[in-house]
Length: 271
Image (cartoon, rainbow, N blue to C red; front, side):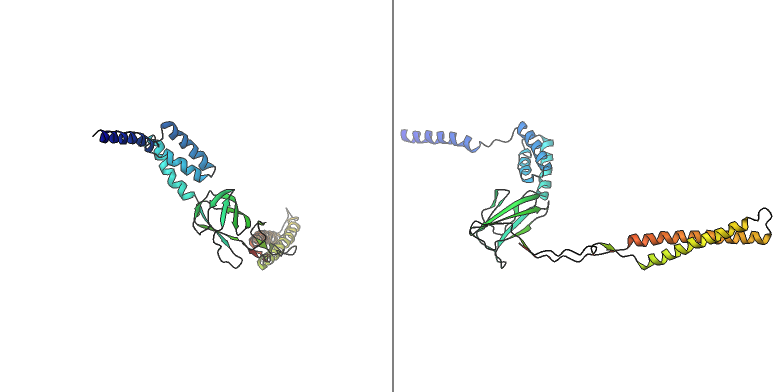
């Protein structure tokens, strides 16, 4: 009986020690809630979305004030939507996948093995480093915000053990000859309307001069001279308006004419 009591007391003592240890992860206090609330906003502004997500999980706890918990709970969904994921695959020169390749992103481990699974990362530029069979390939990538399962293929196409490469090989790029890029072709309509505008300007000048010559008879002009004066000035006005409108349309067609595309550069890039 005594032995049984001793065993019971020993078990009770063990439970007394173990229960606080199990429940050691206390819910965050008010100060922790506010601290995580502020940090999450700063991290999100800096596009450090994964770190922001961890802080939001803290300030979304039930022990946090209502407005803090509500904001953080709402922001968790927004951050998860904005956080991109990438799929990095290491490949041989023939395009076949390499088993057992490892990768780091900005110096931190990305995955123990590149097995085709998507990994959440922060958006923006990153330095990707892959290693397989003693070959190291480094590559600069840019991850789009909110885009899921963005594929990045890294060509591990040989090289000596421990060699470093940027993962890309490019053939020389053909540059377009001078004057061939972005030339704007003047359409036929511009030439035609330009001719009409020039003719209108000449007609305006001619009939304007004729009108002034007839006008020199004033104040003793006959009715016939007055009629000629009106006719010359009317033709001059019509010529001026026609030439002005034609010139405007000529400029419009010239400015809106499509540019001739430059010859496409021939580039061969293999990752």
